[in-house]
Length: 490
Image (cartoon, rainbow, N blue to C red; front, side, top):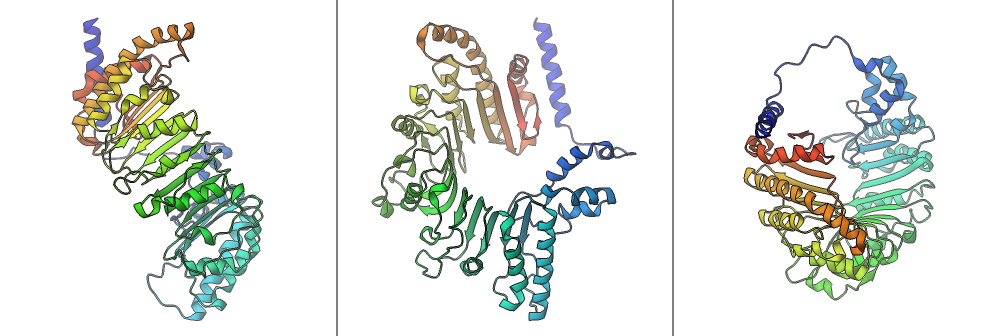
């Protein structure tokens, strides 16, 4: 038995060395292109995954998909032109890329005429598909005659717009609002505006009130009072850099929102204007920069009661986080929290981790922690490995680290020992639950430790003994990933 274990350990070290070895310096010679033998349906799916998804990626550049796909060969061009979904996203990011170059009025008009022609062709290729339009860094200060062709194209195609992102200035936003676009299919709307003023009387936008299918709103830099929307129909909200009192009021006016990402800060002078809110529909909540905005000022989380909450994510922590804040939220909301995530800027500790043993957090099935400290790991796995009532329903555990061998080695060792102990606890706890002591205790199904930085500095061979335990867990059906995002050493 000992000899077999030594063989397994030696094989694991060899596997680690092989996975971490440098990539070959030369590429193998290619005599054929396997993609040519794939069914058209598969090639189409590959094409669709080539489309950039972010607002800052311009899709009207010949070097980006889908235009790039038109230039490869005749067959690809024909396939791309006959795939409407490939043209469902129209991003414009600084379309002229003039780098400060000045244009004459005639040159400006010619460029906007070209841009209008591209937009018309794009919408035509999209067929009946709704198109997501992003307009970023367009020179809206151009004279009205020069920009008129572009405005006319927007008006012609507005009925097909399913999503609209406007990344610009207040002046540009007002100009677009004055176009009175017909947007019957609009579902997603994003404002990201620089230089606006909360007291600016000029910024009044009435364009988007008559949008019967609008469900998702992302808003930044625009006074909330300037956006007359049918808020009760919204189901998704992302707001950036608003006071807690403004955020609370916005949520109060949007009672159907199920998913929200709120970048909100509570300051001492704002605290008096914040009232408690019961939001009946919130299912998935992400709070950004809410904790630690100002010393001795409670976070927005303390003002919320969320009976439907299943998912809670805390981002950009700058101080240690007290789990009691989550416990109290769940207690007063009487919700069934399933997923809890912590993603700080830097390593911060989680305190009051005994709350994971309390009944209010016993429903958690997923726990995700970025940059956990040594103390956090110690407390977490001491509880998890010794008490079946500690996170009894947990099925997925995820960590993210920078490449610090000591911390990663501690996490791997602590988790390996705790998971093996837990396996021995689960049958006993399951038997007790059958006898009426509560819901059955679950065994972990997924363990993931991702190293996002300095991966090559981590001594995985030195951890081979602990990693061998994870191989045993994998053989028993646990999904294990320890390594970079796309490379596991186990």
